[in-house]
Image (tube, rainbow, N blue to C red; front, side):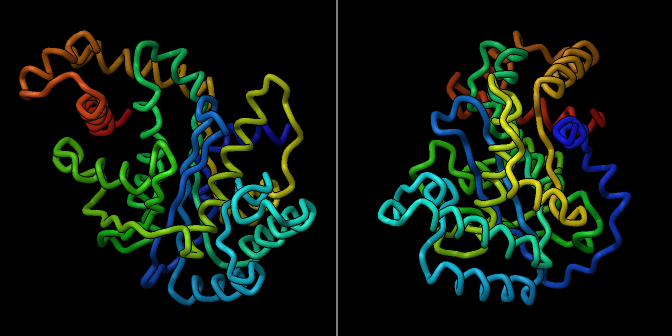
Amino acid sequence: MLYSALLEWRVEQSRLKRQHWEWVMASIFGDESADAHKQRVFAVSGLIGTNIQWDQLKDQWSARTGGVVFHATDCESDQGDFKDRPHIENLKLYEDLTKILVASEIRGYASALDIGAWLEFFPGVDADLGYYKCFTEVLLHYVKTPQYHDGSPMEFTFDNRQESNYPAGLLYHYMVNLQEWQTANLFLGAKVNFDSSKDIRIQAADLLAREAMKFLDNYIGPKVRPMRRSFEALASANSRFLFEFMNREYCADRKAKDEELQARTGMTRKKMAQWFRQNGLSDNWPNRFRYIAWIEAEDKKQGL
């Protein structure tokens, strides 16, 4: 039942329950997570806090890790810096860091996508073009939620590590600087920075992204697994950590809205080649991304 309830959890509903928070000098740190083969689930997270709140988290986090750079996947899978440590110690570290994040005053949001469902309803579209949906949802969540800021441009910092096929910082940077997004002014002049995972704030965001990814991955099966205690602790932390799951139902609804938008505006996918010609663009992955971004911008302007 808790799975179903969380999958129906909408950000707008959670906003109504929250008090107005004054985020003075607040900054946002984010990261991404995917399944081992990057074929099932992709997730992006963002954590927001004031300088004081971040300093408190960093002190406790550093004391617990002993200065070891935390990677959620490596820690749970005994890889990287964690491969020579006892598995039970790695799991205890993961548990303790989750408790530190839950006990902090940091707030967070994560968006996760069912890749298989996305490709089911949008066949023929590169899977890469679906991943950016998670990024836009995180960005828009923060810039469109008044409780987080006073309307001034927000500052995001994301991990720029290159071993991922879809580095969060690069995609954010690309999106924010696309002419289509700038024209729509969807991100309200958001500033994007890149940093390494040595930054404890990015390590904490990595944990949140992994929990969102694992929740949806466990839900879609084929074998549904019990809810992770770490996810339950975050989801139960007085609505401080919000999750949006773009599952099969979401993708079906998105497809219906996309068809409605196409019918009203004439923006069919068959016209993609024509759009390329009109804008002097060749047919490649970055330009297909721009085409989808343009459709998404029009979608947002229409209120879909």
